[in-house]
Image (cartoon, rainbow, N blue to C red; front, side, top):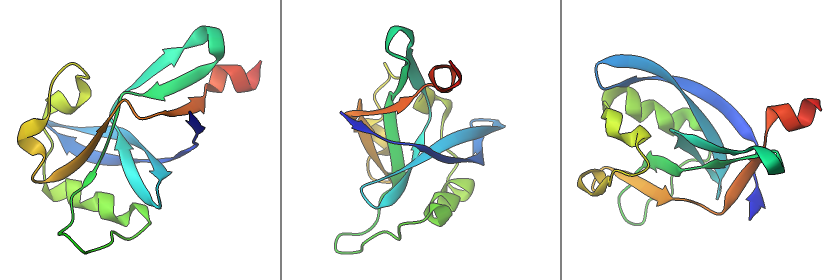
Length: 112
């Protein structure tokens, strides 16, 4: 597993509301992290999935979080938060990495 850091958050329209979504930088691009799983006994958090805009074949996405602004126009459904729900219908529009081998140190572990 590779350690990552929280890069920031963006306000995005999700379903019928606006929500603050965390994002991380991984593989030279920014990814949304719609949900985390806390592993309290190890003091870490695991992303349940990563989501990024899909680009046409041969186009390298820019590395910064600006690409996540696409999601302000492309309203994501609330199911992106449900790790048990498949997002297959969104694959033409977004890249999805389910249960990536990544972790972040829990804020509570850093304070202790």
